[in-house]
Length: 116
Image (cartoon, rainbow, N blue to C red; front, side, top):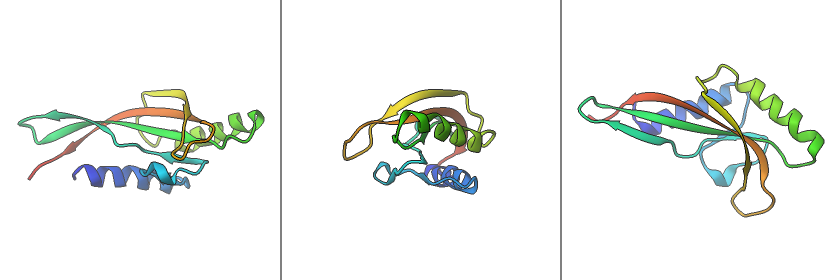
């Protein structure tokens, strides 16, 4: 399938759930999901890679009483979408500066065929 197609498929899945999802950090505008470039592990001779994904569920930084409900809604929306292995609270600094925004960093792995 190739890495670019894998990234597009992940973004499409989040969008199917009714969420705004981006792989361009400059487009992050909470509430949304941001997918940075995934980590790769090459399986030489097997024509495949192992991909370690991170997705940031990003909530607006409006006030403390709105953060928990916003993050909770995002977590509920993505539940079951991917085989998440971890979900860590994260303070995400967006491009262009400003105050960090609250987020959850979700992690999971997959495999993909590569090469000709």
